[in-house]
Length: 508
Image (tube, rainbow, N blue to C red; front, side):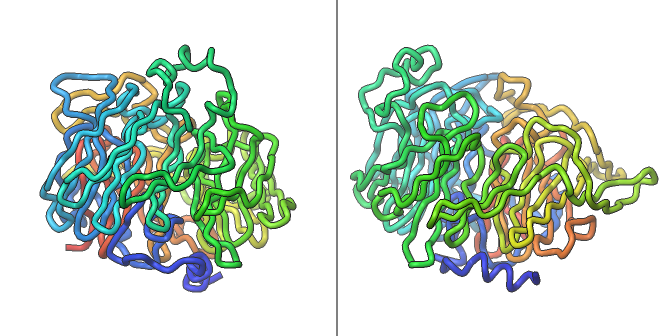
C-alpha cells in the first residue's frame, strides 16, 4: 500500500475542521490523524528545529490544544517546595506565535491525585477549544468553560468514584457539545473518590461511569450514554458508512472496574444511544478504542482482533507473539529482519494507549522489549522493530544510544522542585504506564514516550524495518525531561509539553 492511498482511506470519513487548529486531544478529525506535513527530526535538547519554548508553572499531562492562534494546556498549581500530591489545576492560554502567556485560570478538584503519576493525574484530560470557547476538565471533578479572553461562561462539578485515575476518555467535541466522562450521581462525598471510601458503596449502576454530553454554549447536559465506560478506556469518534457519527467505547481491564459486561459499545454521537453492545471476554479497556468504517480493531491478551460493528461477528484473530517479523540488532550491531519469529514471554502485548490505526495498519508499542509493532489489517501480518529506549545528546559530545536502560529522571518542574512521589513515575515510559497516544501527520507517525523520546516512522513503509525509522527525536535533555502527553499539530508546527515547559517545533 502506498502512503497517499492509505492516508486517504484513513481520512475518508472526515473533513478537516480547521487545518490550522488542533481543537481536541485526538485532533480535528477525532482520530489523531491529519493530512498535513511537519518536521520529522528535531532535538529540544540541542535546540534543533525548535521555534520557541517557555516554562510551565508545574507538572501536567494534557495535550496542547490549538485554536485560532491560541494554545491551551493544563498544569498543576504552582508549588514552592518539593511536593507529591495536589487537587488544584490551572487552565493556561498562550499566544501560538511566540509562546507568550495570555491568561491562566484555576480549576479546582474534589480529590487529590499524585503529581506526575505514570497512570495520569488531575491534569490528564486535555482541553477542548472551538468557536471561541475552551473547556478545561480537572479529572478530579470539575469542568469549566471560558471564552478566549478568559471570561468564565459555565462550570460543572462532580465527585469521581473509586481510586482509579488511569488515562481515560479524552473530552470530545461533536455537534457543538463537549463529551465528558463521569458517574451520574452528584451527591457523593469526597471520600467516594478513594479506594476505602468507594468500596463499601458497591458496584451498582448508579456508580458506573458514563459519557455525558454538555452544550458548549451554556453547559446544559444534552445526553448521557446508554452504555457505560470503564475509567481505563479512551473512546474514539468516527463515522459509519451510512453517515452517522458514532463513538466507540470500552469496559474492562485491571482492578475489576464495576461497569459490565466487559467489551465494547458503539454509541450514537448525537444522542448517546446504544447502536451495538458486544461482550468480549478478557477485553482490556486500557487502549484507544480504534475503529474504521464498521469494524473495530483491538487487543485481547496476546491477540489482535477485528470485529464487525454491524453484526458483532469476529472477523479475524491474529497472534501478536508467534509467526511475526522482527527487525533487531545482530551480534555485529547491524539491523537484520527475521521472519516467522516467536517473541519472548511478556505480561501483556502492548504499552497502554499507544495503539493507533492509520491506513491499513494498526500501530502500537510493545509492553516489553522496546519494540514498535504494527498489524496489517488486510493480511494479519505482524511486524516489530526494536528501538533504543533512549538517545542521549549533549553539546560537543557524540550521541549515545541506550538500548536496555534509561537514565534516572530528575522529576523536577521548571522551578527546580521535585513533583512526584512514586518511584515508578521516573521509569522509561514502556510497559506498565498509561502512555500518551501517537499522532499521524501526513505519512509519518510520532510516538512520544514518558522520558521525552519521540520515535518518528514512515507509517506506510512496505516493511517495518530500520529504513522506516526516520528519526529518534527528543523533547529535552535525557534525565531531565518528563512528558505523558501526546504531540499536537497546527499551522505547520508541532506542539509538545513536558513537566518543565511548552515547546513549539518547526523549521526556522
